[in-house]
Length: 396
Image (cartoon, rainbow, N blue to C red; front, side, top):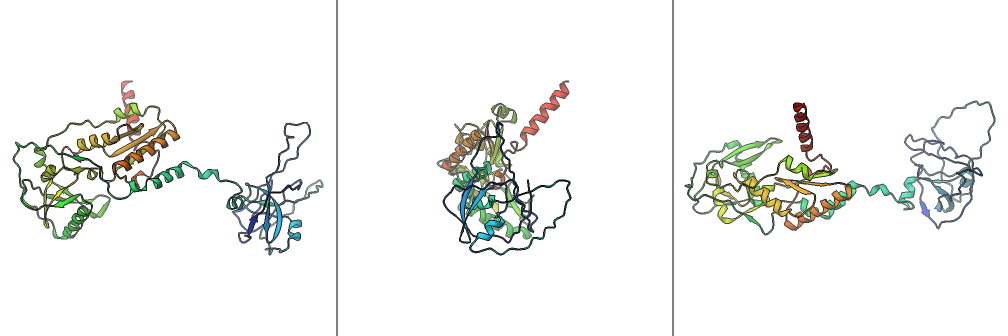
């Protein structure tokens, strides 16, 4: 086995020719010295012995290439990171490439016996073999790349705010409760520009709309900075009084214990997250008045489901579960969607089916938060197992 460095400035144009039979027997790989620390040649030569199990003859992977107008037979060596030609081949070349003196230092070693070596052979390295498409790079068919191709195929579900097709959700209101118009709360002057910009953004995304004419319900807003982005604000509607008139739907949201049974036997997990999930559900016309809120630039109301509504979580859970109904290995808790499978192939098949369903329903996912595969289902498995371990210890 030999290892040497190579020069990074020795790239030559190489063209492939047709394959040809070529005999080139040698006893040891030649050592090629050059001046780069990160490049090397590994060569291993074995001689067969009659009567042994290793005496099976195998054809060496050789090919004929054209280098500087000279046809040269080379051995395809995927363990080499440089191209090598021996001295005899170099002397027979029509146009000889310029030689650069190596910077590698050699040391003389004294041995007690005499050895005679005949070095020869031309090597085609791994990178050049790939560029000439002589060998395939199978490692490129990795799971990560398959997921990237899947995301590229369904790239529309990762852009913009979606809206569930052919569906409007209704907020059930108890008409025996008297509507209340609450007084306006003054917004500090130093955040008014930010509030106006946020209102314009929500209108542009078709989340809210302006209110014209009388309205039975009006609620104030609270402006709060976003925890992870202090320079940005979040507009929250104070829905405490309107919530007294909103009737709960009582749909059950699954718990971790409910999902553990479904996840039994699964080994590969993915977590999908809807982009502003509540805002992808459109409200019916009669459900919008109760969400009306007051600002220093006029009244607005929600066209989509909002966080402050007391029944929002139940409506969202039921609506999304219905939209994903029939998909194997897919479950949701609120806007978090879990995809699981007993094997990588089964998981990927189910993930593709989920993307197709999301596309058909006009929904969109949060690409930034869906980057990590096998995320232990956003740590709830760790939480569940920790709770079970604590319970067992306590029982003992």
